Amino acid sequence: MTRARSEVVAEGLEGVYHCTTKCVRDAYLCGVHARTGQDREHRKEWIRSRLRALSTLFAVEVAAYAIMSNHWHVVLRNRPDWVAEWSDDEAARRWLLLFPSDRAAEGSPPPPSLSAISLITANPERLAEIRRRLSSVSWFMRCVNEYIARRANQEDHDHGRFWSGRFHCQALRNDSAVLACMAYVDLNPVRAKAAMTPEQSEYTSVYDRIKARRTETPESWLCPIGEGEDGRNGGILAMSLDQYLSLVDWSGRQARADKPGAIPAELANILDRLNIDRDRWDAAVTGQGRFFRRVVGRLESLWGAARRMGTQWRVGSERGRLAMSLS
Image 1: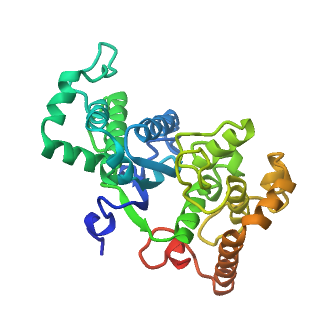
Image 2 (image 1 turned 45 degrees about the vertical axis):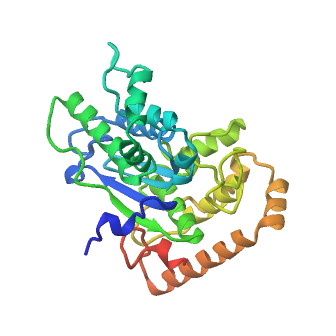
Image 3 (image 1 turned 120 degrees about the horizontal axis):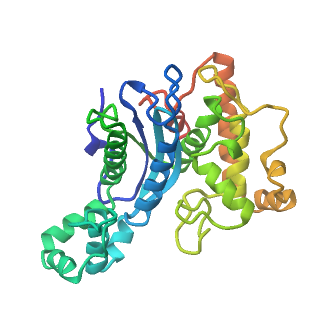
């Protein structure tokens, strides 16, 4: 039985959540339709750009995402502690940028006026509700999905439903669950045979992180992997970015009975493919790798048992969820 959203998301408390949204009737409304050949790949960039824009306004971090042709995944961490630090004017300004009362001629919202900000800050009850919404996973997802649905319907000259329903949401209760789910999300194109490797998996967070890693420029809109990676935010995992990339690469090589794709076994390790200094990697694992080795050990034992027993591990159900199995 589907649980009520209020039982999954603890409003006002920091948490990490895996959210998924499917197109209506599983149609390829964000890709190339296999039967009709209609190309709507450009809508994937709409979703990515929307995620990026909202991450600068909400107190919600995007830890991982994958945008496929008929559905998309995102791992979010809400940060009510950030909202508590914002001034009243800052909270009101962010809200008015999300929901402007008017728009400029080209469609973009003008900067919030002092009078509009004052109307909000003068109402304590309204301001308290706005603060709650700015750290809400549900409001974040609403602002993504409604925007995309309206823009796509406008392009198609249609007014029907775009998404099959409200997004599915699963709380990730511990570090192992977060790590397993992030790897699962980042490997979606590989598992679907839409890409051979993570560095070829466009419209995923791992693709963005690899691109930033190659140029040594942080992809600042994504939640950092390691602690204090961007000098401000706490990282979401107790490992470095290079450790995470290596674990994703290792995970993608494990064949799954319920998925057609896997990273070819003959390919070099991702650190070699990206020309990452292996000495630095080895030192990182030796120096702070206890958590990494513990998680890899659990993953190896789980996937080994799955292969022996023919179990189809998957992320999605309340009981068979790989992420929760790692707790």
